[in-house]
Image 1: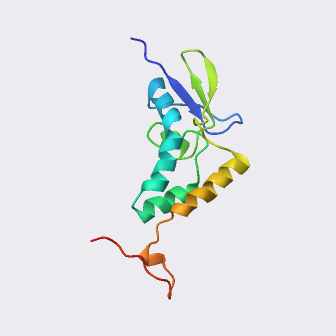
Image 2: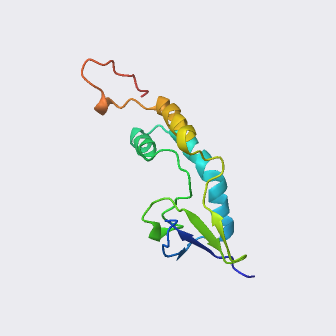
Length: 131
């Protein structure tokens, strides 16, 4: 069986291409699910630290995976090249937003912020936590 190869670049300028550590099918699965997973994680996490990290980075636009693309320095990938068709492909995530739409979503996601007792200001009412 012929292994399908994908390469990635994290800059649209003449940046070097690096082979992905995942197969094309896995990369396409990430591309199809990563944006929804991000939104679900922000809305449903019970860990304030995880949520802060997600919100600081903001909603993803393109693929980002430190295991699939270790040379990307944990940044988003701007383009993919597939050996199977010798062509460049977009690294944009399914359903991801850009510009004002992305900013509006980011603002909406901030409504899910977990109030962390360590970050509350004096005089603020503390939320009760289950035992």
